[in-house]
Length: 71
Image (cartoon, rainbow, N blue to C red; front, side, top):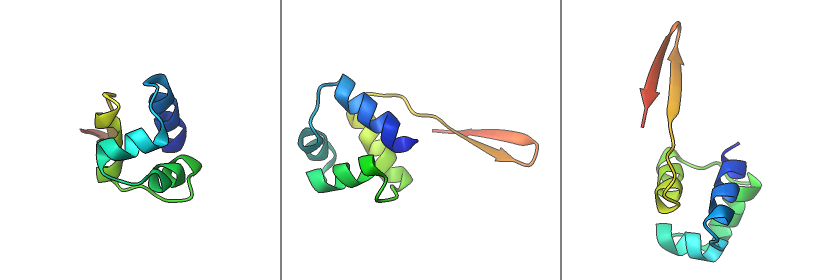
C-alpha cells in the first residue's frame, strides 16, 4: 500500500526516483526498492518521503476497541 501511494505522490510532483532520493538523503536504488515493495520501510523513512513530497500522512492504531491517531 505504501509503495503505491508513494509512487503516485512522487509522480504527481513530477519527481524522479533519484530526485526524491536526494531530498531525503538516500540513493535512487532505495526509492526503487520502496516502490517495488522489495524492502520494508521504517516509519521514519515513510515520514521523510511524504514530507519531501509535501503530502499529509496519518496513521491509525486500533487498541482493542479504541483508536489512537498518530502523526
